[in-house]
Length: 296
Image 1 (tube, rainbow, N blue to C red):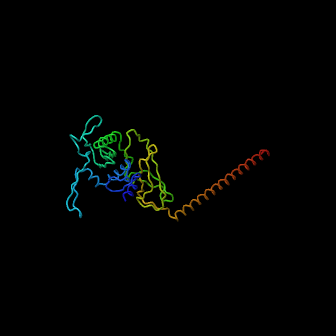
Image 2: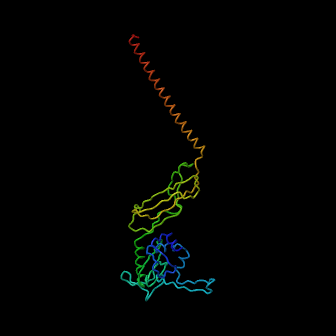
């Protein structure tokens, strides 16, 4: 089950052999995969609440009849003062980090010290992963990574939720065009040097069958920079879309045929009129010329 879930959230270089993380030669992962796992877990409100607490009390269960007290070993949340400082940019600072929100410490003799850190400042949320470290080194590396992220990246709102995007035409629909709105919004972290003009939008409309119900997903728009996908947003239609009725279609076809016939008849009548006018002019000139020759 764990490995199935790992693949589901994009952890392609991970294999779990147990749920507790103790060493097994076939139990492995990568920093990239652990970051994906951390992002997934961070979206769970209960997990996000628990990982920020300094301690936590487990209530009694049907197996354990007494409360159990757990202490959070994440020093990024609270460690200050003597013995809790790290060297950052030539200065000793407290391990406690402004805006820290979690996340998970780890250690085995084989893996050494590991740490997944998380922090929020304003509308920017960051997660870092440090592996194969030593004691406080995992915190200094984490702080450097988080500082780099906050100093060099900005959260950009590409499009909001329930936002009008554009109109599109649907074949055989009763109306010429239908509006598209976003099902959800999309915000991404982008380097401070990235210009908004570099963002490319690729619109895809799915094959659809009429009628289309209100709020049906009809396509998506993908945002890209330099060939790299920033993410995509599903597009829905806020209205019901019905197909053109068969009688209406036949009427339209008959109407079009009649219009073409009328146009052809009108052209023929015009040609006949022009021809008669031409003949009348020729006859008039002929008679006039004949009178001149007769001396009339």
